[in-house]
Image (cartoon, rainbow, N blue to C red; front, side):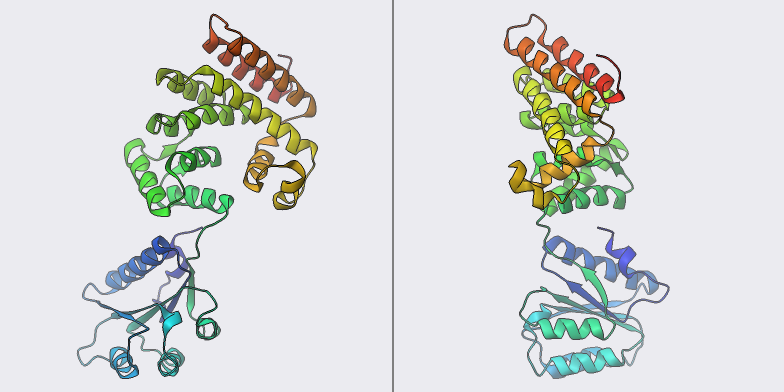
Length: 330
């Protein structure tokens, strides 16, 4: 999901912008960034907001008519799906012949209500900015990684997974977390970074170790492990996470390539977990996975059987995963 600026920016500001969807953060961001473009072109640009459900046709016509004093304007018409029947013809007439100094931005929830109006705006050539609610796990991961890129940082899918588990699914909270991490770290975010900032979440630490180990990132796995142990996470759930991680990859790899949503019922796991395992399976051979599962079983036995150095048992397993993934003997 790219920045709104990248979607609407051009040498000439778009005369009509349709923000389609009801994800509050994306809608407000689209309005703010379109407004910023107008003010960059004309520092004195006037911005006015109206609600389509209460705006009268005469008021809109006056708003969109050429100004006696000139200057750029942005007219924001919110809740376009609520526009009255007598208002729609006025809008469409303007869209057919817009004022080059005015940008009309219409927000529309994107549902069945007012659909014909939204479709008409698109057919008339409005610049569409998607702002639909993010429901799929993969799309949330894309939002997080895209947000870091927008802020000038970089974050892998595994770290984005960990951040979602730590922060939750609210986009505003995720955006705030991304901004804070970029400000504090300089922009390079990995599993260890997320574990460090959200170490109060034991389950994040355990799965952060496993995700990095399964991906073959030994350094990140060891750093996440040390943070987890330092903050009091018991080694048992970490060992369990390692075993679960490699077993999941083995099951998904054995099932072959396919659509995660179609495979979900057969494998008995959510589609997002299958998609994640499909990414992690790249680079693993069948023999390597067998070797890693054997190492995970030995780790579980050592950690749960009262090994004198449970941390060392997990470290040894992380190195065993790396060797198994590279195809070498343990």
